[in-house]
Length: 428
Image (cartoon, rainbow, N blue to C red; front, top):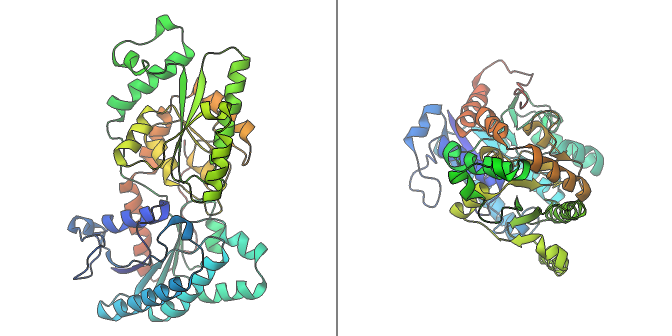
């Protein structure tokens, strides 16, 4: 089966572009000839039976440009659309794969243009819903004329792929012929979890919950040598208000106040890993950490490269991501935390509760630093994270993702549409 992939790969690097890159690699790379700078063809990926022809629809150079309108973006979008139409006839590709926009007007207008230009030339259209919330946004924030245009241009897709049960509503709003639920998945970033991470995690957990005489020896005790009374809380994402950087910092500070009031020697320290998207939020963060109490509770680490990121995940005790970002759906950073068996504090937002066990104590309301503080204190005393590692292995591996994605994409060749969705089992 031939598939025209109209989507961008990094840079800029974020969850959606990374998942497109993984899909291309897993399906054998770009099958177009004489191409440079794209994912190379990998014959091993052909086992899925899908040949990808990639149009790299990159119109933003930086993260802060995503969703903003510039004249040059319009020209690039026109050029990419013409490239897709050329591929349709040059390579005989009849199936068009596209990722719809989150709830933002400029991004929606982009979708209109792409659909108007490209859809008439392709027999089959697949929409892959990485962002969440568009369905509700269409009904509550737009006039009926805009909704009608959206339904006319993107409605009745041959297949809509969603990441979770939560955003089924986004897909079903546009009346697709088929809907499939396919969770994200990533290569295992910690295949040596049992030997490298788990002994350290257990030792540090024991140090917080057991008398000193019962603490483990050997490598476990060595893991406690550096700052044994400091609980390391990792925030790894773009440093944005809506991604929860300010709530994470305030939550750590409030947790430390509670620990001090109970005369505990333990303190939490936030490792803030990621780049600030706007100068305004960076300036606000700097003003906050000018306060000595705030400064003592955070270490700003910036963007972490591959090995640095792995070290941060291995050495951290907790993961904190109290997001309420507009398009947040099934973020890769939480999947990474699960892979490292790292206890997670996150929000009741979009698809996030579906990623964690029912009744999980690390789920908090959005915009609630006090609840973040309580969840951090609770998890550091009762959770080693081993069950979260199992959730990753059962639900979010790259092999599982690619197999399910290939089955979903191939389903468009079935002459009898499947109108019902196939939902994954809840995390346990």
